[in-house]
Image 1 (cartoon, rainbow, N blue to C red):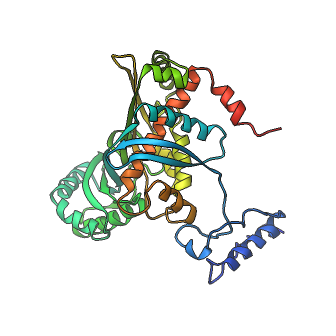
Image 2: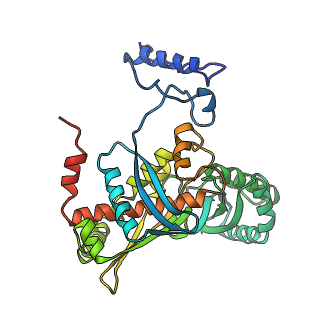
Image 3: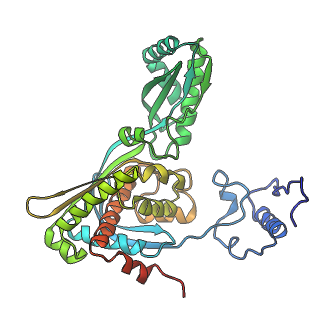
Length: 394
């Protein structure tokens, strides 16, 4: 039973806390304090001993169904060829829709994907007695960038400090440290490297009155205009051109109809004040993130997508999507857990040297989903598809 009022029921811990016994003890605690009898949470293939650094107070696993869509044909600089994409979701019709988009763009010659930029941020703030002192500090930072870079990079094998942007407000100077982070997503890497650099700065510049390692200017786990413009994670463009006859055959909609719907969609999004003009980029990104062990909260940033379309001179339909803040990893974090690693291995994307390949696959997958949903709305098939594939009630 629950603790008496005013007392706190403490979750049990053990010296060997990452063990089956510790997990079983916490499960029994849950049964006692909640009065429920969970049957499935504790059924999984995870070895608790391998979960340190991924979870605390471990009791079990949430199992999400994984479906496969494909083949996805990618003409990237790092991802080239056909891929079968694992999507973890509980939303009926999602896998089928992405699969249909992949079929369409495979027949159109594939998706061209390009990584345009790569950077991860940490954004400390420094406070001074006046705006002029903040300005003088910024000048000093610019003059000492080489020493600051050495300090930052001394903490990491993969991270490299690209530059430090400066933003002033009142008597504060905000520094936005931009790193490349190899095959890791890099938030922890940049935090450690920036902390080291700022410790050196504070030791060598006596005028700092206040300091915060993160000022919210990096906008962790939040979509923001600064990252749409300046990049966070990988900036990736996926694009394809669909011949008119193929569009009519597969989607039962013409390029002219889809282009007109895109114009109306842009107008509706502008009226609503949305942060991107895509259809549902979060769907494919979230499903891929869950399947491959990404930090799922990064969907908040990664799903900001910029769609641009054109009617071509021969009647075809050019469609592109730019993802300016795609935060992905192929090593570290949850990527090494058993099922997550297997999903990355299905794509040939587990381990070092694979993150740009994975980013291209993610962007190409998103493009397929955007086209499939958009054309289903135009052809008035959206509701019917959900009725057939997305209903599991009696």
